[in-house]
Image 1 (cartoon, rainbow, N blue to C red):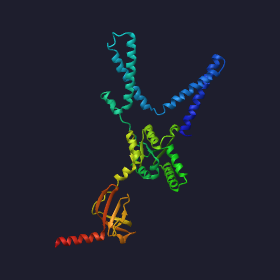
Image 2 (image 1 turned 45 degrees about the vertical axis):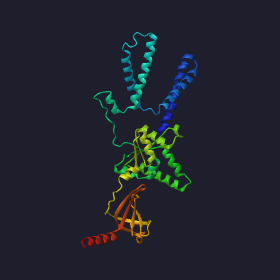
Image 3 (image 1 turned 180 degrees about the vertical axis):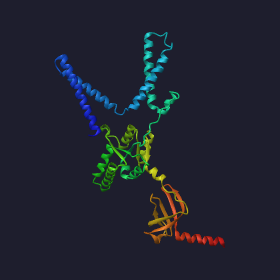
Image 4 (image 1 turned 135 degrees about the horizontal axis):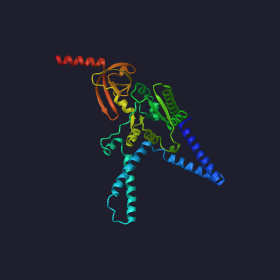
Amino acid sequence: MTPLLTVNLLRVLFVTFCAAIGATVSAELERTMWPGLVTGLILGLVVVLIDRLLKGFSLRAFSSATFGLLLGLLFANLLMASDVLHYQSETTQWTARLIVYAAFAYLGMMLAMRSNRDEFSLIIPYVRFARETTQHEPLILDTNVIIDGRIADLCASGFLSRSLIVPRFVLDELQTLADSRDPVKRERGRRGLDFLNQFHHSREMELTIHESSSDDRETAVDARLVHTAKLLQARLLTNDNALCQVARLQQVPALNLNDLARALRPMVVIGDEIQLSLVKEGREQHQAVGYLADGTMIVVNHARPYLGKTTTVVVSSALQTTAGRLIFAELKENSNAYSTAEAVRKIQ
């Protein structure tokens, strides 16, 4: 039974229990159960409605609001204990007291809910709340990063958390892609589902399907991902730069897999020897082009005869462009001949 189905079942049982209690009380007092049955049913539905309205309100936020409320009422009480309104009429004092208490209570709750735990040390001197940490902080996955598949090795190696959360709407999106008539989309969807099955059967990873609310189905997937990460106090893992920036703007911790790939990209310096497969012609007649494993393009001079082969090249220069890093290289044999000629010239 899914968590969402369990919650709905509990709601139905609660409303039924309220109706039964109302009917029992009404039958004892008025000899008829219908007024109490209707009243209990209405009260049960009202409680369930309040529960749905408070679905995004966490216990941590409630604790902060309660602390802020008490603090605001304390300051309001200290203010009203003074003789500021002592010579005013009873009506004026009552009105001012009501306004002050309401204003301070509201401001206290709002300030407390906006503050983090570290800021409470300013209010309570010498007291600092310990930061909660878990060994495996959960990660919420979006559709693209599941299809990417690189997270499997990262989680297995311990570089990322092994506790993975996939929202139900992400799973539905993968299912839609897998059933698409477009062969490219269908292949992407099936690839993502295959990776999820691997995660599910892996002993090194803990995969959880989060049952999201059905009320926000019209909301964009990216917005729902950010909301879910904020609700579950989890980090968002994606390879979408725009989604990562939006999440960080909303104070949601987000990890971009592309940032990790760029950070782990091997540094190529002048003089390095590389085994390179030359796959296409360069812009100049004598040039051939190959690619590193991370997609960096290397242009090799005087290598057109080696097109379609793998050969050893020596890095001669590098250029940073708007499209990325462009590396120039020479064939190793040409590089050795050039170095020998240069040495002979210097001796002469």
